[in-house]
Length: 296
Image 1: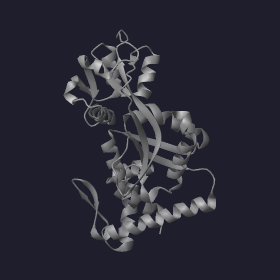
Image 2 (image 1 turned 30 degrees about the vertical axis):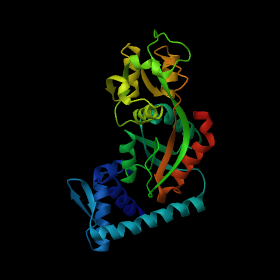
Image 3 (image 1 turned 60 degrees about the vertical axis):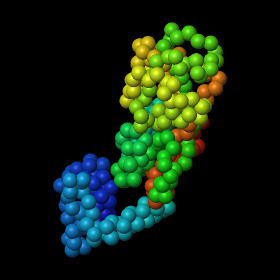
Image 4 (image 1 turned 135 degrees about the vertical axis):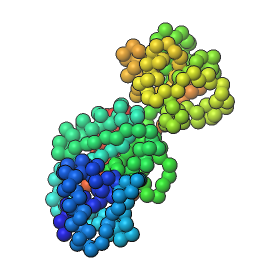
């Protein structure tokens, strides 16, 4: 049996699309269709069906797919054991906003300097969406805030940061000030589903304040949009320290120190439990863990 047929089958099921599978495997869509057809002829049964929700497995396809995954995993392990050498291939990763903008570009650049034969494709959204991509196998691993516990996921913390309160550069305040002094200000926050917003709301409650003490005048969909709004003098906000320190260096905003506001959060590397020993995935995780201090 041709391994390319098995890989095409696996990818089509993971991404639920012949077109996307062809794109990720760098072949034509007809080639993907022919490989699936060859498998179906070999097993004398229909393996997949097209639905409004994308490509789905047939009952016989479910049985065969489980074994195909095992075969490809064993093959990857065998190649890694016998051939050794540097990782080669493509990684599709998912990331929430802050890791994608402020952390991963530096990590990927450093990784490719050592492993130039590994290529990357990145998909970006909120943490909940990103983790769903992982569960649906449309990405190889993800970098997000803390994911909800799930037995099919393997997650490890890789990096810590804190949240920073920011204000327009002309904002006058002592150093440091009580966080409650900022309740009189107008606030611009990230959208409800963002990790930053969730961490902020959790902290407000932990400090003993009612969330409606904060006068929220706008909710924006990206950290850059929040920075631009604060820079324009629309109010104050709380954002990732990675983003805040960069914006302050460029003179766009100022960071306000509050002696009773100290929010630390972690970013996590997550992959499917069954893929944690995949050569490319494990190589990338090992690289991050070894060089993490360089990226913080």
